[in-house]
Image (cartoon, rainbow, N blue to C red; front, top):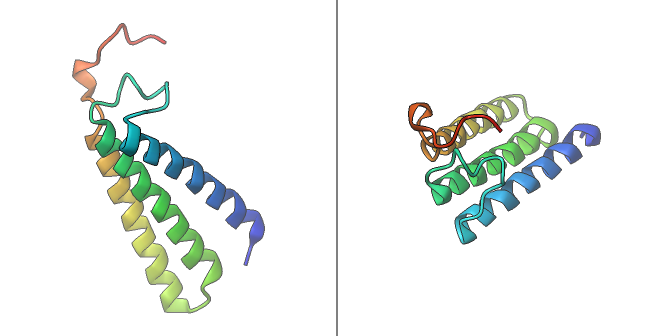
Length: 104
């Protein structure tokens, strides 16, 4: 197992999961995403799926050592990641109806 890859990946997944739990439970989103997120809880569920997919990638990419198991585990992790990103994108506002001036 490659700890120099696994530990930062799991920490990143933990941060994403904490943000997702905050969005689902309290309706809270990080301040740089507040303007663009329209459906907060849906966005939070997408973050939770992305965090799960990242942990799935770590387990099947770095821990499991079967050639076909490793391949299919990593491929399904990519599918989970894509599904989470799509759910997060659905939770955001469309680009044309953005509120505010558009400058930070």
